[in-house]
Image 1: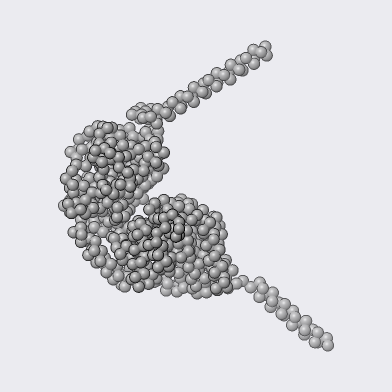
Image 2: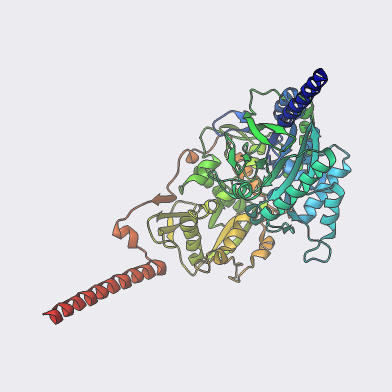
Length: 632
């Protein structure tokens, strides 16, 4: 009996020990690998660096993807939006859906919409989505939780785009299972992206609240189907800036997101931003890098970062033959269906450039005269005069439409299109209108005063010489401005005279909205030749066209201008020519010369403050004296 009791006790103790070990045992840990890109902008081919060399290209990107999938067979491949609009391939956006078909061939599991997917308006996007489906090619899932067409019965309902979303199968999120890991992938569209897509026709739901609801729903589905918590990935077209921004706020306010692939701001994050248990990652624009995130994951939903890498896509990466052949096929289609109308070819060399132009980052960085901006505006002025035979007084472009720089060495048609590719519809066309001399001065003031608040608003002019002092009163920074004639002579700007001005549709719409955005403090009113005001919405009626009725595109104007140089870049673009002088001075003469109402109002306020202080001081002194006299 004693032996039996001892044996029973030992068995019970053994069971107890086994139960304890089992209860304390950590859940099985898995590796979860995510490969990602964002802001590819139709850059199927490698792009030229401003200082030589190349980056990007889908055939090289495919090689890097294959190499990573050889290491991590269960990796998922995703993209953060703006997969279109940025190269000649975008000209087939509505008819061939080249970008989505290429992503499908490369094995992308999911992508989301960026603001540039709406550049062709709802009709163009609907056509693209249907063309993608009709191709019967493999396609990536499109996830979009908070930026969707109005529902039937709601204002702005569009049956065509709604049907196209349904036809493609656009969803809030998708569930993927790879190597024992459940992934919940959803898409979010940000506020700034919405501002950049004013004609999208979509209804935007508040990103943070919609993200919370989507994470909860997707997580529940993973648990129900597979009995595990998911790795939650947000494909966000919202962006970060200086380590914070919309995606930072998204991560801070939404529980349960493990990874945010952050697009829109063309950011490069050499290490993830970690906030609230969420890792925010970005790999730069145009396929410069392939992002690789390795996470440690268990079935309880615990996720930690194991490693993070940005793999450069450059000449050191060999091209994948299959993808390279597909790109060449689409390239031939673009030449046949689009470029042939302009009498040029994809790789046609326009000029050899021996001068280093600003990079896009350098254009944005400071207020300055840029030879790149000069080239754009000079090209617009020259091309419109050649096309119409009529004199152009002033031409301008804005930083916001400069997408790439002009590279060293041979400059091709493709290079120029990439540099000036902001829309090939109405936004990519040149418009010619008239403005008064007063409004021309206001345009110069936009460059001087608005740029510090909105970097994309820096302007570059042809036909004007001016200077401004950054220390002067806002909206009164310009202290010198003259019209610069083609022969180099200078002419005073007459406030009441009408001047013919040329710019791109995008910049024209921006200038037309100056009054509303400056709360009425500045005004630039486009006018016809008789001085009658033109509504911004009617600028499309003032597009410059050739004798055949073909609209003059920004990229074609620049291409023609370069081609006319005779093989070598004009030496005048080797350095700034002094047409815009930016300086900072607290010298009273520099601060007050050519003062306008804004400076006078400020001076009046300052004088009133000084007078008030003097009166208050005198009052206090008198009061003290009276108290002393009363005490005596």
